[in-house]
Length: 269
Image (cartoon, rainbow, N blue to C red; front, side, top):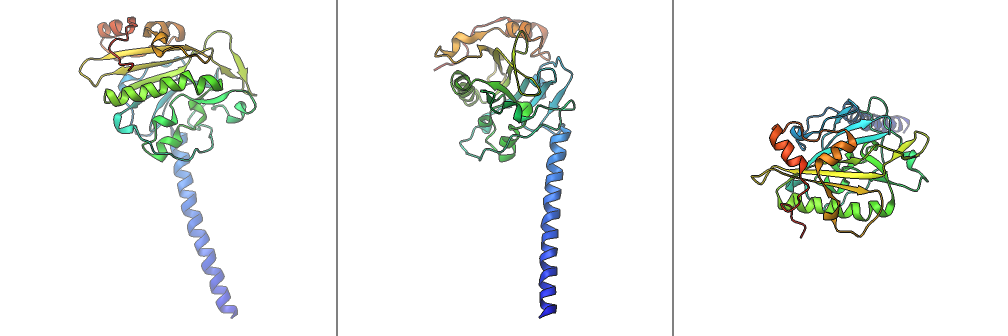
């Protein structure tokens, strides 16, 4: 009986060791991916990436970002939203995690606790439902900005849904979004995360034969106004932020597209 009990105990210890080692390898690989921030990006197009005013561009699998240590958030997050990315799959929301790929140190999610502001996604989790890994990756703290709840769930959410509509209609769009990190801003938390007074979203469609862009600039407040009233030229957002949005485009085409605030080529129906 003693020998049988000993064998049973040894078998249990071996099983624990095997499962523990597999868990360690999985966690190590996940940590490596997050810390590296230079994974091969199969689901975004680097050609349309903006310039960085912070010299800290980070590439994740489903999106890229330029992190501002001064304001403890991304000055922009950029990603391609393809028609094939659109899904109604509902994944369980994970916990927010610090983005270890940010060399200067990304803000902790606790800065938002009891601040009165939502942890507003810049690349929405709803745009990355094509896989659990892509969905969960949007819960890195480098991908959030303080947003008032009624703005986040109201006019901003309405714009995010319209972007999905255009992604389906035009077989994909490239999206750049962020807060305007200029002027006098409130701060939250011990790390003094800036609260933008305005948020922007810039889209380019290069899939329908004729390249077109559209840009939105919204005050950080809820509104019942129609979305087209927030359309501005890309030039206006560039002047506010200091970011060059589409530097890879041919100069004449870039100048023409970025100077226009005409939205007639985009369906709002």
